[in-house]
Image (cartoon, rainbow, N blue to C red):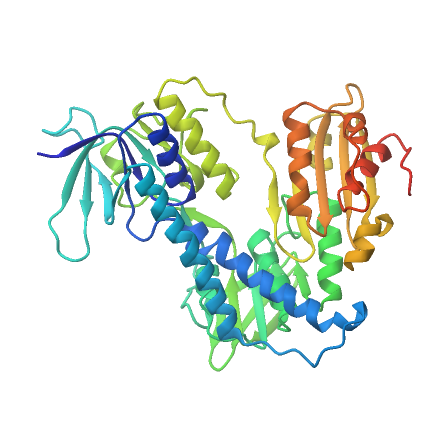
Length: 473
């Protein structure tokens, strides 16, 4: 007889396993079906490995600049195999941790490919899960009262542009490089493309970024994007904006050559490798959605604010529903979904309160509206901006480029958005996130006494700058 569960989660990535843990805490009997490894893209092919490589690049850059701090060293070299070994060790440590959490929560894990079946002898509603195995083992059937789709996403490509994994790579492929190229063309100047551009430039690779739009990091505040571009150019990164790659022009021999169209002109680029970074595509194929009444729009599963699909017992979270496509977003969507299943009446997520982070050097972090978005929504604004150059700890740290920008509603003083570009931006943004959740004003941030000397002092100064009364600028 097929085993029954209160909840079966399709996909054991960050959103899926966090949802499973929360469901187990609420007393539900839970199973996860994962075709690859627990932790999913974030742990094995995304957040964690890329940040491990970024950290190695940062250390290499700092070592080359050690003399500026009075530390004399011999010329540093990169042992890229050791860089990759360190990355793998971090992944394995975290993977073991996730496996332990599954045991702690008494969560059953099925290592196979899960597919939603239509109404059957097992259940009058679609939702029975068939688990298929690659080793020839007979399919397993499990019957859940509720299903949570958390199958994530994968890198997209451009039409007619074939990713071969070696000469032309996705971000997944790039994480497994055995050696660094001398030069690379990065197609796409969004978050992933800019992180790779920063990392590879710090490793000493000659980087060219081709971006179709007129602005890199198109979802960020224009002032932030301009600052990131300026600082990456100082590292030697070349930018071609408003440029379109012509896929049929690609020639792959010892190097990769491609033609790029900008307005009425076309130019040829050549590099050792090409990295295609043009967004991600939801994993919705072959999981049985066609056996349900679930609605798909623009390639993403449609849900309500509690992540229910059109089939009320089937929920979906994370990259598969689009939206911000961030690991921490998927986790919280999963928590809301299972709390709704358990009847605890969770509050819907306010996405304006969720911070986004870019782990380039310099780092970028933001929460709330950009200045351009606030204008589009008709807000009259007050804006405060303060530079890291006036912050003692930034000078001590040796990274004084960048700024904090705070946007508030001129009528109510409510915070509309906070944007940081500079050292440890991704660590400092949570103060702004908390301020947004608490509906704080810049004045309330300024009344928080920030210890000296710390990078966080810039938050208080930027808040004061909204009224033009900053102390050190």
